[in-house]
View 1 (tube, rainbow, N blue to C red):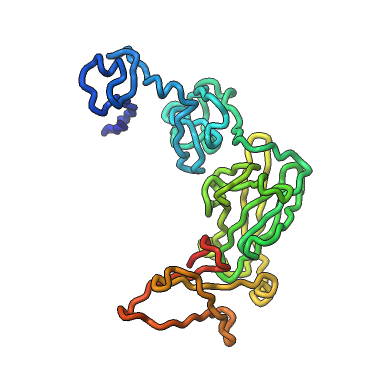
View 2: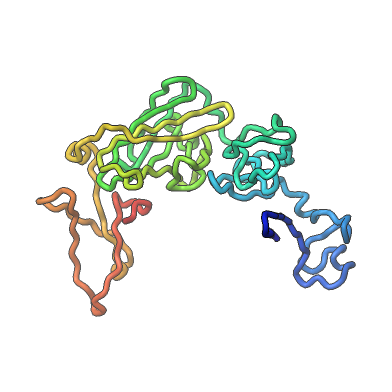
Length: 305
């Protein structure tokens, strides 16, 4: 139960209850029908033994969406790969615990030096390794190498296509088992970075030129910074703009349409000979004279319009 007072007073409480058809105190102690076992009743009661067996209870950081300890806010790797977690730090009075230790930039009252660097369970990248970028500009078909400017800093360039939006992900040594990706798909620059490790969900970042107010053809610089304690991916729009005629030649795209009356199967569209920015499709309406449809770029369902 979380409660907030009035007049400038705030309070927070966590209430654990055995619940589920508990009948008598003795039944609670001995485990009940479907409840959790507790060691004692009253003010000396402890957390349920089942909870004490867990490595950690995690919640999502409200900023980077990565896993963090529900109590102390320490950033944790996914799937409990760090083993048993013990809370080691207390933040400044009135400091927020909504952010994980990676995103929190305030001070600590106790044991600030004991806050461990995040180990996401991936392999150490080190220096001198080759990092590549694959993206939606060519249907994720090729590996484009990033340039290592200094130890741990890799940069590359992305040119926005006709939709002014591009997705990408990073791979070390062209090995799918060494993917570098965000905690959620379609992530912004603020999301936590995971890897190198295998990613069955094929998660990646989304550069949204429309949100940034830049046109198609705008060139972005993407930077991967691999530090000893953290990994980050950032990008920024450059003043350089590539003509769309050149972009279409370098990275041609196709468009399809999916209709409800056709079972959402993808049907190829044709590019207008008069305007390369126009794609067309024609069909006959059924008896209801209604149709629901959407478009798909390069037959990639993650690029639906």
